[in-house]
Image (tube, rainbow, N blue to C red; front, side):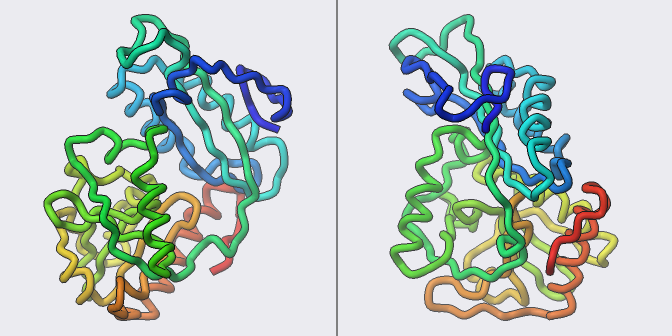
Length: 283
């Protein structure tokens, strides 16, 4: 089942307009979030990011409609799930220029979430694709998602789990699916939101929680060499929460303080439990 045109339908009942700009031009946005006990985690933050991105693109997105779609698929089953909400600008005439008047197409789907997704380890491989801070696709979750797709494909071909993507300036940006953090003692560093980094929802959660863990936060440019010398490197996103990075290319990274890694996991798990009626993330 999926939510499509303001109701729950079966996938084989969907008729997709071949003039849709999301299909033809990648002209649209999406969000991916988890839901536990029917409750989408960090729901308001995801809605805020999507509607803010829509404003940047000049799309007229109805926040209430997005909320209705997500809650409808979250309520289908109590089992943990991954929800994707997609919004295309809608149909339009041939050509690149968006029409003056268009009605966005919004739909939402769900897939199973399993606890093996959370708090794992990953090896990264540096890839040839770079993040361009002048491109909106670097800082928004648009339907034009080929850069992450091809980055992950290249990393997998090199035997890694994910990609290390740098910006055109040479500083680290992200992985194909996650923000990055570098920890040295009690210093927590993450790439600044300079246009080449997605303002991740879990990224924001970590930055908000860091002071209570005694961590000093810095958002700034980070070099690859700084990353390789760190006590601990982690990646964050809304499906896997935290991932410990164990290697980059042929360089093994420090495992850092096991106590700090455990504390970070516990803190995220507590946030999920508090917001989602006691759901327990295994960690």
